[in-house]
Image (cartoon, rainbow, N blue to C red; front, side, top):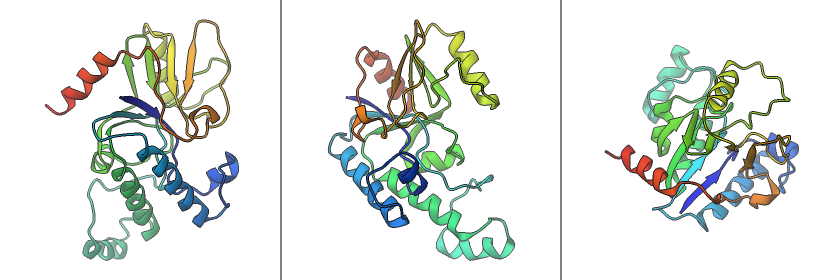
Length: 224
């Protein structure tokens, strides 16, 4: 099976408040929600399934991230040298890594605006590939819904809009919108796969018409 999901935001308490997640607005509530969606995910996805994560798996709120992985003995040395802002960032990145690593499936990450880690960090989390967008026939996969009515200031979104406009795609599989639906536009079909979208029931979803053969071929090429 091929599944799509987005905006899990592991460990982010603010998402409980802003997106009406059904748990207590506290750090404990955030962890409970993480376990809730992990259980939902694991009840559906098997190891052989392919899962596209359309961004924002979790934020550790750091502008720079060392492209190395620190063991407990090395951590204190880094804090003394001031190479990393504080220990909580390491703890958050480790928590996100553990959550993602616990999820079955052949996982692909389409980066979102909260995915600050290096590509090597996300590979260590268990993602087979990390992209800003992918194209499969008529389907354009990216984090953002790429609506025309919304003015953008981020260069990456301008680039994604250009790549979408010059592609043959009329369908966008996206995240970012959470529990809100983006504007409808003539000639475009959008699939909001955020866990907060009521239509997903906090679970990965399938999409009718996706070119499965090309996706299987793409994933197979990643292991060569």
